[in-house]
Amino acid sequence: MEILKKPEEMTAWSKRIAREDKTIGFVPTMGALHEGHVSLIRKARAENDAVVVSIFVNPTQFGPSEDYERYPRCFEKDAKICEAEKADAVFHPAVEDMYPEDHRTFIEVCELSNRLCGISRPGHFRGVATVVAKLFGIVRPDRAYFGMKDAQQLAIIERMNRDLCLGVRIVRCETVREPDGLAMSSRNAYLSAAERKQALAISRALRECEAKFAAGERKAMPLLKVMGDILAREPDIEVDYVAIVDPATLDDISEVKDEALAAIAVYIGKARLIDNTMLRAKSG
Ligand code: AMP
Image (tube, rainbow, N blue to C red; front, top):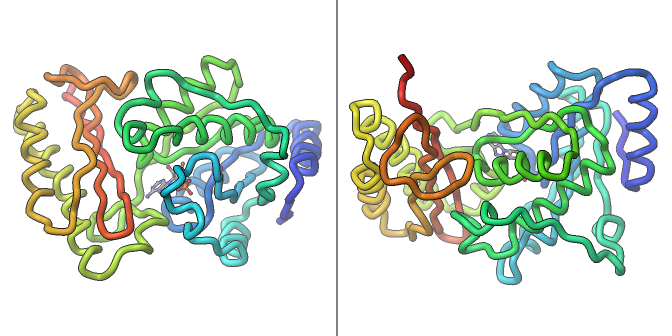
């Protein structure tokens, strides 16, 4: 497995692979790899001739009072995981090489970026879209793998990829959970044992919402109430949002027709955690 630090080295590597008529599967990450990331790498491994994992804590997607400085960084351990999962290359650039002094271009995916997490994290998705576009330009993948846990991010990247004709096949990957239901996240490391226990209310709220939906409830209000009530019982949880939205536009919906995204974001201790589930009315 190769570890490449310079963008031009990464591009040269990818061009070599493409000349051999091989496909490249790409998994962009910020490191602190867990089973969620591993599931993306495995899917990429199964579907492509070559696999590239990027590990880059992207400063432009963090707000000034957010956790950029203390975001967990453990490159040696991450590289071992990538090697064990048979990645062919790890791209681990320096901030100065991704954002040189005279970097001036940012990508804004309008409307979608100002909903849900975009409200409490202004500029976040501008940073995400920009770094993913840059990474696509550097790595030149055939397919790129993203987790459904970050459903808004995925919707934004799909729209950017389409609008800018980037030509990457975006592959959606299921959320990987701890055995007790908590969605895996690098930020779970911020939780104390007591907070970790309370954080289970997030997945519990989503499961209850699913159950109510399965029992026939289609109005958003009662579905939102079920989730809100479960979260409200936890003293250390501060709800950022509980929402039921159209999965493509992320607009709030009042009544679910075929499909809706139920999404939650909370603050708990030092962490901000998100999770979601897709509600699908059975067809036929
Ligand atoms: P991050 O390192 O948090 O930027 O995440 C890198 C990629 O891993 C993103 O596409 C995430 O959606 C995905 N990811 C993070 N957590 C999970 C999870 N629990 N299950 C599946 N994918 C995940």
